[in-house]
Image (tube, rainbow, N blue to C red; front, side, top):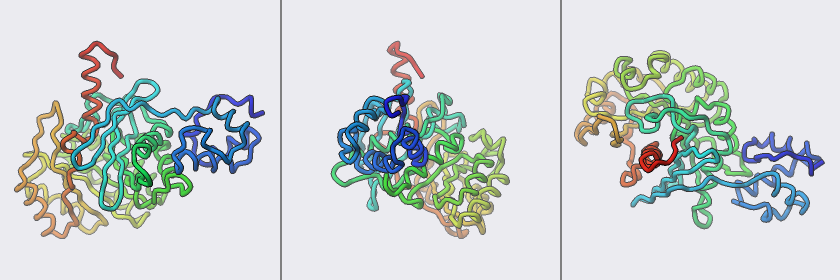
Length: 358
């Protein structure tokens, strides 16, 4: 029976799906635990390393279940230790992932789509549109590539799904990835060390609230009123701020977890004290935290970064109004670590030289 199995991708399976697969080929379900632990915890890249598997099973899996990983097209290393990878997928598509060292461990920014359909005016990822959703294995591979480049016992200990794409638009695969990342025999990343970012897909936020996972929800807010937000984030024309804030409050009520609101400060667009006062007004009394992000310059946009004085005044105003707020520590600024920029330049270079595109 085992010799008749079709080619499979074990990295595209949840733990339960992998157990079902092994049972379907006449093997005990615990083989799934063994193989996935080798892959995700022990960083094995060959079935030959999996010495607690029978030889016949290792040989069969070697021929039918590839462990290949994406090609690293480029790796950039910043002076602060941040590393940015441009990965080529099996169909030629490209995604970025960023690994960031902190005092408390190593975090990784994961992409969930090839491109993005949200078309936020200030973001490089959306400039080329959406190609497709990433499969579970393609998110897993981002973790495997980064862990494989770390030395010794170092490994990624926290995740932010804040790279290319809108995670909640790839809901099912993202949920499988989060659960697999948390699985203690594999990557073993704690729920509270996983952050999922969204531009504000209200139905999916409500669905996520029902999951009652102890992850952090991070909402890309970036404006405190519908007029300003709709001008820079088209999603707001479908789900306005009142709907969004109601969904976020329901998420906090269901999970007991505070919601983080990301707020990119754009010179002359959303950075006045009037905007700060409005922001405090819509957040007052909610379980929330604001993360201020001075704009990181993106090619082919007219937006500008506000002065340090403006950023400080905005921060001080929120503090004076009782809002829990921080200014994001910049990482990887000397390698353009903001999502989408490396991929966009790679595609532009390929088109200029006569190569294909995605």
